[in-house]
Image (cartoon, rainbow, N blue to C red):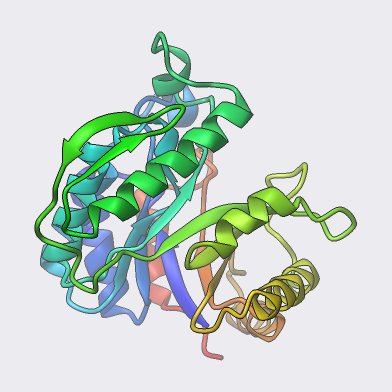
Length: 285
């Protein structure tokens, strides 16, 4: 299992420095986050363009994976998204990944913009169309697109991503009693999943991850799919190193391939506390 860390607080400069510290202290990935204006969250703190932060991080690191938790694709123009992602992909030598979701309505870029889709079903449909458009852009061929939410004339991106495509990890809602098949099938079409428990924002426990991994494995086998598929768990590692190692071992045993350390309390978490956590390094498995 690999370990990533989210730069949840701090200036753009502090986040780029945090990415460098992640690489220096044994982490496998650094993740920004994607919003435009979050109102009074964090006392009305500034929010920075994730692709700009990741582009800068790409120039001060050599090894770690780079991404955001998560890119809110329904409010991105696909052609601009494709260009920004391609830029970071090439600056990093192919280290960009795209965790993606429908976004949250706390972001005023959804609710303060006339004509922006806000309904969950519409955002989900637009997410799928943006992803389809993005994948077409990687072909190197001229293409047009006609969807219900995204319609464009001809585009062509002659330079493909470094590895031919950029890994996509959609958010997938999991409920062991009633698997929400449609949104999970979105993840199965791509390269991984960021699990979220139905009805809660809490981190998924190891037993829920194990149930999800078993369900995904059965679906992938039935579809004849092989190759790597990332299961990206997230939460807070204990400050006690032994307890943190046990947390990580439980997640790895459940089938998670990534653990993303995530600290989002504006009353307790600071750029300084994030830096201290990063400098401890990930737990040993």
